[in-house]
Length: 203
Image (tube, rainbow, N blue to C red; front, side, top):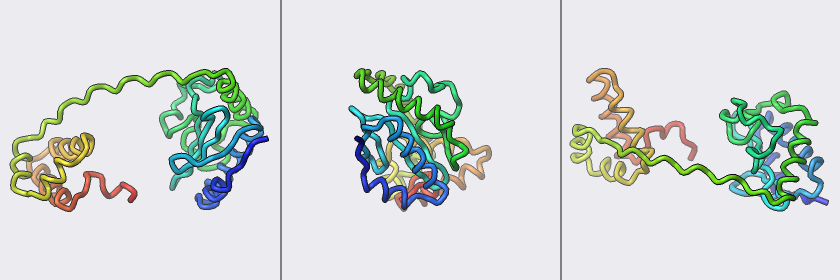
């Protein structure tokens, strides 16, 4: 028999009201499709284990997500379905039970994923990441950073992506007035240690 984890109970209980029925339903179907599955918490979300990783699910502020660890190898999943790009996993952004595939389809996929683990099938190697294009910081931005030690320190300490966000935001301004306004705002935020999209990032 499988094994349930009380931490998963707690995770579901803390999820949004819309998410709880979805998570509970998926949980039951995974256990039904793979009776020997064991639950755990990895990376802060519920995972289902059967001879390795089988599947995982998560609840966010406005949607739920569910995915098979070897989803791209599950033949009954449509890899061309646009829902794959809507959220991690294969079922897209789910906000209610109506967003789930029919139970018989989910059960079929759970059994297929379990069979892949039974057979020791490995996940295909990930594609190598493309080389990052060097960020071209405009001279006027460099000059402004040189005059603001805090902003300069923050910018230099940022990751490639955070630097790129600031540079693109400033250089893509359509008018000089907008560019100068964004530059001033960028320096202010950088001096406070903030990334370009700090307003939208969860602490």
